[in-house]
Image (cartoon, rainbow, N blue to C red; front, side, top):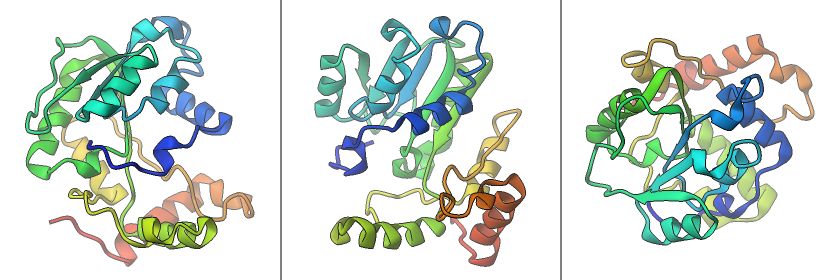
Amino acid sequence: MEHTNKIWDKTPLSDETAKRIYTICGLDIHPTPELVHILDFGCGGGRYLEVFARIVPKEKLIGVEVDEIEVKCVREKGFQCLQISPEKDFLPFEEKIFDIVFSSNVIEHIPRNIYFSYLNEFKRILKPGGRFVLGTPNYPIKRFYDIFKAFRTKEYRYYLLDDPTHCNKMSIFRVEKDLKSIFSKVNLNPTYILGEKIFPFLKKEKVRRCLRILGDKIIGYCVK
């Protein structure tokens, strides 16, 4: 959750990505999205808050972030944003007040000794039937994507060297196991598969499940 000047964090989200986020969060079928209360945990510069603000009023959105510069940036965009300490493992909110807790590319930066404390915090502040939505790199497959992106974008230094702040490297199966210990229902899938635009069959659920097994079981990554 620290300020790292990530390339992707400054890139606007496409309409396709925004629609995918709405679907994952259940906003595309929600009868009253204007009443949904959303927390963006580790909101960075607010790029996801801006996406939610297209259909949810800003007063229903709030971000938390450890970096003072990012907090200021988010507030200047007109959003509520609280700065939290990276050493703390609790959130300054009452119980059962959020419909959605959203977090993208954050948990891999949280040491495992406080990671589970945050998961329990998310459950505490969610309303009954609420939804925790997260995105995190799927190791070790993530490194194959990095190599592809390095040659596609020519940002070799950025992509070829793995992020040193990733202290909690996760596979999709590991995330699934962790969340099932706390939440009643878990549904995790890869959000993007290399080559899916060229080969549409890769988007099929059965194919995704097979690739998920390949990434975790055959290549074999285990978090200690």
